[in-house]
Length: 463
Image 1 (cartoon, one colour):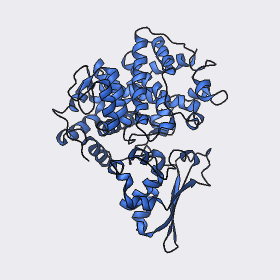
Image 2 (image 1 turned 90 degrees about the horizontal axis):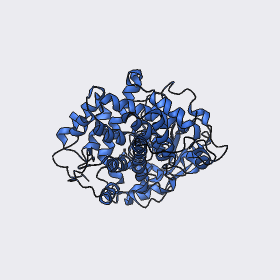
Image 3 (image 1 turned 45 degrees about the vertical axis):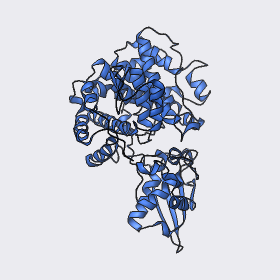
């Protein structure tokens, strides 16, 4: 059997009743968090441009699918726009297996298609878990070479999660699912050269739309080569190169445990590149526990796994988007303000004179105890030399967002969701929406969820 065929067989085997309770819980968390950050991203300029090009406005009513923040459209337009919004702020969850963001390739497609097909909350959760497992397991076969070569795995691997999730919602046959996966091989794209620009979130919108389109076209009988993964000019050899992948790893211990459970996803506390988060928490520890202030810092050294450095060692970010990938700026903000928030990347905040002065004493480098091939992919250490000549340091190992090993409390989940949703929705409908998502498995129709996100008029964006 071909790899696409074997994937299709396993995708078709997913049933909600077979999913462990822990996986259901984390799927609901991932969906809830993604809806929150998508609402927050709906008003960003990159999303507005995509909407204008697609001819969609808040008053548009041209299809069955909700556009987050206002309007309705056809499913492929909704997938493109909402997918772009979901990643616009870089506030969405991330995971080590995929080397990127596991939920944004899934949730926009599940919401759009679920609304159109009459899917239930249980259907949505099942599709999410299947999509998460599919994209993560393909990642096992190609990473870290795939990531280091310059591909953006959220898009180039996430598209297969989109196909898996939508294939279940469309009730595709095994053969149709095989064709959709093979077709998606030719629709996968996204390079890291465009990180720090509007194109990065567009990767996700494009990927979600293409994955959904592949499933819809396969349902209509569109064909592709079932050997598109393993062919000598197929996905593995073209994207990774001969000798730089291990296809057998895709099926090793498939769903045992499910990747959503172990290692799981990591929720972002900060709206910037996940590779900076451990260092942020190190700096915040020094601020809280040592009383460190900007005036105290003569030199700040940030040491991390060298795999993290190419896209975060940016001492002079030229925009708010690029500031999300500047360890120098982010560490300066953490020290100055004792937090890192959405407002730090809006407007001309990245040009703040005090931040720029503090950035000049920040140095970023590879940690000697965290080689690229180690298990410590997201560890970091911050070492501060004070104006008095003292050295203060804090180190965190193996941190990857707030996941199964260190979950957010309900209050923390609510605080993030509320902060995000206020940028698109009236305050009085946010808590009911949050509570609806908490009990997603009891929802009869995804359309009831989107109805709860459809205010009479869009609230003006704050900030």
